[in-house]
Amino acid sequence: MANENTPAVTDTILNFIGGAYRRGSTGKTFDNFAPATGLRIGTVHEASEADVADAVASAKAALNGPWGKMNTAERVKLISAVATEIERRADDFLAAEVADTGKPRHVASHIDIPRGAANFRMFADVISTTPTESFATATPDGGKALNYVVRKPKGVIAVICPWNFPLLLMTWKVGPALACGNTVVVKPSEETPRTAALLGEVMNAVGMPEGVYNVVHGFGAGSAGEFLTSNPDIDAITFTGETGTGQAIMQKAAVGVRDISFELGGKNPAVVFADADLDKVVEGLSRSVFLNTGQVCLGTERVYVERPVFDELVKRMTVAATAFKPGATGDPAYLGPLISAEHQEKVLGYYARAVAEGATVVTGGGVPAISGDEAGGFYVEPTLWTGLAHDSSVMREEIFGPCCGVIPFDSEDEVIGLANDTDYGLCATIWTENLSRAHRVAASMQVGVCWVNCWFLRDLRTAFGGSGHSGIGREGGVHSLEFYTETENVCVKL
Ligand SMILES: NC(=O)C1=CN([C@@H]2O[C@H](COP(=O)(O)OP(=O)(O)OC[C@H]3O[C@@H](n4cnc5c(N)ncnc54)[C@H](O)[C@@H]3O)[C@@H](O)[C@H]2O)C=CC1
Figure 1 (cartoon, rainbow, N blue to C red):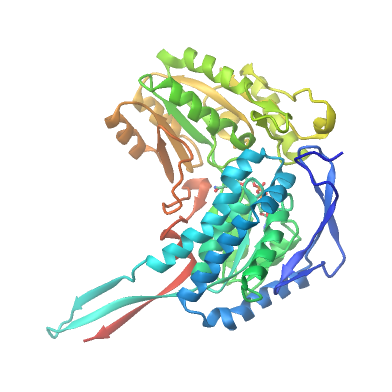
Figure 2 (figure 1 turned 180 degrees about the horizontal axis):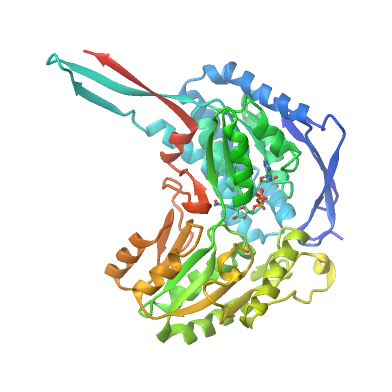
């Protein structure tokens, strides 16, 4: 039976190549499931190697067609129109995203869809307003030379995306790629193909030239993902997903020495000092652990609390955790499902392992009892652990679920060591009312993003990315121009 998190009928999801929707040339399809119910809700047409080659050829041809001949102002007008059209069709995008992910409508309507549109508008602004670098250089003969930079599109960009914020994380890459004059072939996650496909309708509606935006559906190895990264006409690859997948893609990118931009996993720490405002901490920390059912690369999975407030914080976080209602579609406190049965099994594996590694399960730790339409959905309980050793696997490996381990600490030096003792380096959150300490500890975190007394306060103009196993490069605002353009320095003797 359908509910507000599933479409009423199953539907067909097609590839989008050269401005037209296409079935896969081999006739292969795969099922699309609603995580909220576990029911099959769609059929996705898988792109063959030939289809991917067609998509790349369309994208390459578009570089030499009307798109390649447009000036920045003309491109910006089209890209801004894409943002406006996404906003006009917000209900369609919302329905597609909620069906694919099962996430609460208020999450998709406040984060996924508006930020999906904002990514186009913001990068249209960035490309319109970023000045060109230039230097006046003294020459040996006492004269001068003028150096200035010409930015050119890199070419055809492969955009490979995960399932947790499908439209948002895709447009975060497609927006700057198009703003810089590139063309793209997108491979959305096999779990969440709908919004990438729907964006094709938007591109056609605003008059985007054919071949600028292409979508190929499928899986990773031996499927559309690998076909795309292996295609020699791909000039650069931008990828968000698991660290292991990033390593596989990097090997493909090495052939032809193609550029990469990677946003990968994390095992992000939160550090709570005893002087923090605990009301603010509980509000921000519970969002950082449970938003999107913990399926946020920026989410907190390790919490270090200064010993004097440890018990109090655990008590308050327990209350916050139990307020979430897994499976209660429509309830404002709805905690959505995990993305798939496979991911549910992975997260439950960590729930079992936490116990084996000596955790005290403060709350949660299992599968909620759910009846009705959602009984077959991929839900888990929001979960808090204490008593885990810092070096236990549950405290070291990314889980990507609604859970965290809470550990006490006694000194600033100790907690800096604990927070940085990880292979990852995506983000950290510090909670303190002591301004000097906030700056000092923030600067000592080995991460790409550090928040103080807030979380997920994201200005799209700021640099975003991680160090270590969390990624390579930074995207956002002008930082995206580094990846999506090739720069040429012109030196003119005056
Ligand atoms: N740092 C960041 O900004 C973010 C990182 N993530 C990470 O993403 C992961 C969750 O997303 P998933 O979709 O499970 O990641 P994943 O790495 O399994 O898949 C991501 C995409 O890569 C494709 N893919 C898989 N193998 C491939 C291959 N060999 N060649 C080419 N493409 C391939 C998949 O089909 C999918 O489209 C989490 O581990 C999380 O840490 C998620 C969101 C943001």
